[in-house]
Image (cartoon, rainbow, N blue to C red; front, side, top):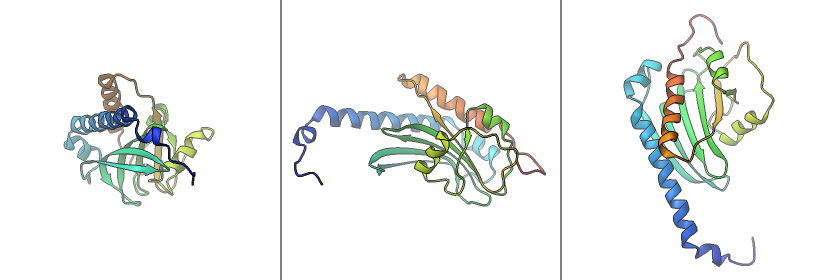
Length: 183
């Protein structure tokens, strides 16, 4: 631990207010996105959808974060979840989790810029970011649970940002499960 207190940082009201405003902006962005996706669409995509939820924290490896979960079935064998994560200091990410018994085609996710993540720890964001840094591999067959992840470049304009995120969700919800084969 450092022997001195950074009192200049502590007393910098403009910095604290600026960070709090940004947190409010991201919370508003996730609320708008969640409200823009009807529960019926989530249930049509995945029968056992439990709706939407925003979570937030202040210390994921020392950085604040916001999470928007759509569907919210976290079962490793038959669950499904669409997760948007705003991790301050790192970026905005979209993760799509499919349990071991769910079969969805790989091509729509590859074409949309997703990479195959680490399904053994689907809720460990730092582990998933390591997958983004690896050379891209195109899976022909994936056994077990699957997690797709991609980084989203967010424009500064909030209206354009919400439009972009809605388009991402719509692309995901248009993918249909595959019957009879595990992909």
